[in-house]
Length: 253
Ligand code: PEP
Image (cartoon, rainbow, N blue to C red; front, side):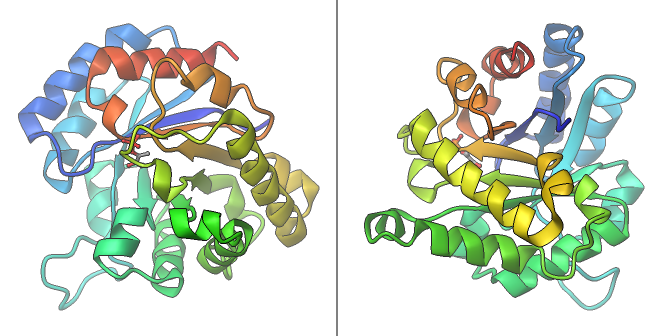
């Protein structure tokens, strides 16, 4: 059975010291969480201290981006080898902010997904429509292009290490959450896409998270939906208490 995973995306927040402090606060709050995967996506500069503080616990660490190349003339970039060297396990790829502000295309994101898997990192592939796309009825078209594009050339075996995050862009950081029914509809569509691509057995085992203003008070209802397997959480992952509440909501299902 697929696993519920609750992942925090801190974006450009917290220093290395603040990350260590947060994780030392979070660990006792979630020590008895057994089923639900717990992941925190920190800025590059906090990865090392986060990995150290999380060592031996049920908290795993993610980067929020990555260059697909192993090394070379890519000023300012970080490679999969560098992330592996630090003990990072996951990497968030194709977040809507990277698509929007840094012009990331499905092709480039697909290169990153392949590079992550090649180096034993687990990609969290983000997909989701903008408000105007939802309003003009192209949600499924956009989500299909991003999912199929991001997964091009990824084998069925590799799908065991891929997480997908459905994040409607209009719900990210806005306080507007997709209703559980709205989110479930798109999650079921993604599951169907995965079934068409890889067959039912593989599709049933892929974790598909919801992201977009998930909080302690709406997490349970969202994650209770049949095809919603946890969350990718921005704002509410910045405080250990509220993040722990979301993790526990996921674990109680
Ligand atoms: C995100 O950044 O992936 C996100 C879902 O943010 P928020 O929870 O703040 O909407």
